[in-house]
Amino acid sequence: MFISAAEPVTAPAGGAELGQVIGLSIAAGLVTCVLLVIAWAHRTHRIEWIQRAGERLGARTGEPGWASIPTLFVASSLIVALLGFMWDVSLHAGRGRDAGPLANPAHYLILYGLFALFVAGMSAVIYARDGEKPGIAAVRITRNWYAPVSGIFIAACGLYALIGFPLDDVWHRLFGQDVTLWGPTHLMLIGGAGLSTAGIILLHREADFAMRQNGKEMPTWLKTATLSIGFGALLIGLSVFQAEFDFGIAQFRMVFAPLMIVAAAGVTLVAARLYVGPGAAIVAAVFFLLMRGIISFIVTDFFGEAHHVFPLYLGSAVLIELLAFTQLRNKPLWFGAIGGLLIGTVGLVIEKLWNDRVFQFPWTQDMWLEGLLMAVPVAIASGLCGALFSLGLQGRLPAAKISRTIITASVLVIAAAVANGLHATVPKNASASFALTQVGTAAHPEVTAKITVEPAGLVDKHPTWVQITAWQGGGAGVVTDRLRRTGDNTWESTKPVPVGGNWKTLLRVQDGRTLAAVPIFMPADAPLKVKEVPASAEFTRKFVPEIDILQRERKGDTSPWLWGAANMVVLLCSLAIIIGISVSVARVARRIEEHEADSSGDRTPTLTS
Image 1 (cartoon, one colour):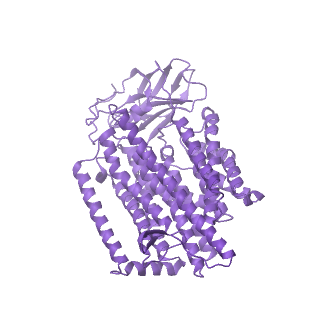
Image 2 (tube, rainbow, N blue to C red):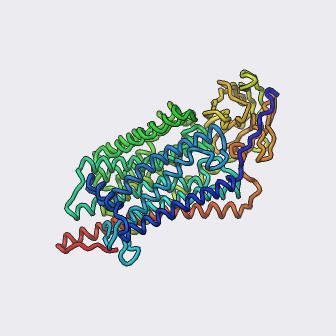
Image 3 (cartoon, rainbow, N blue to C red):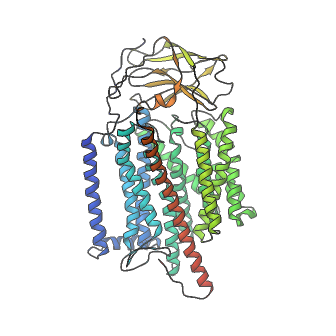
């Protein structure tokens, strides 16, 4: 062996300590009780400071309090939650699992952000009193209590995301820790927060209509800037699913990267340009780049954690703006479909140029055909959904049958693409032989490697990658080395990689559907009851599924039925959120359409529940 035995990993791998769980539960219960008392006191006129706060905020923008207060909460909550989220991912990538929710400082930011998001929605729900109908699409809750439909949706998103926190601990106890961004409960956290940004855009639309009815109007420049930034926030929210690729530790096939980029761009940029007007798509992309750049600087340079990059989106934004110079801007659904096609083709070429320059691994020839077959249909579907969103905000939705067909088809197209991307294989009877050369020190051992893969034809001439990855070593960052090919089945290092301490170092091969790995060094892990996998001078080991190494903490002996049922519950909840935003937009669109029809007939408009 090159190194002496490392200190075993001791952080728990099956859920947090009960003391932390109980403490968080008590704290959350107390805060919830306080908020319920405040809401009751406001609605019964026992306190007036919430009303006065809404009036003062509204005096600056012209918006009613049921929109201005939630906007303030959402703006702060999403920024804080995004910082906490990216910091949390970097901590797990660089340092491994933590000792519990209270042991990770990033979790405090995430908890605050998600709780503030829920409060934002609830502030819209409880603000209106004495039978006031907040917005044209207000929902009747009790005899004289109405709430804006968008506020209900934002609160539901916040609650959905918050529920993900305790469920995450339950998930770990049942199935072990899934050290991946795409764990089901993790998707609840980021999905709820990300989609809430669509709710805040809808809330502004309800407020805008209410202002017009009262003879008020927000200044055009302020409205344009607010909405463009809102769509930029939506672009950020839909892009957090890509974070594993951003950090260079993707645990899924590379074909997902272009798919997720076009999905986010299609919905956001098309809707922004059609609803807000000229330049909105570019402003949204610039806001995305500005915020992600600031977060990256804070996490990497200030906190000293793992470095990450992010997509560009500017090329796609320019394409959408150019398309709007054609007559297609007057045919929104065609605009969305063609815009999505441009994003999924020309836009991806621009993204490839950016990706290959700033990301750790380029998009190679191996992934392009399958990647395009997945990305182009998703881009077109996303562009259509973006067009539908803009039409709903304008009160111009097509027939219900057409809208439902587009939404249903889009969900099915995305589901089929995701299912295809998740299908990966591990070659049978395949192995890798290593010859390691020590180039580090006894305290910080590092090696270079010469590798021979058997059988000889296992990897084709243009694989997605053959790399060595080292992560979770207790220091900052992820170390990756894209190996240099020296023969038909031989590769060698281009730089040293760590093989000591708590580093987890492995050879990774992604070639077509092949997604496999070989451990080079793995530390002993006491909670998992596994021994060290040493980095000897020479050894041969078999290829195994990457997930067996990257997610070493997962339990392999749980019931498949329990696993399937748990995933199905999360899936159904996620579909409910998608249905929620669809129903909310449709409700607002119908009310606007009915009002305009009444107005054209010289009838006094009425607000219905």
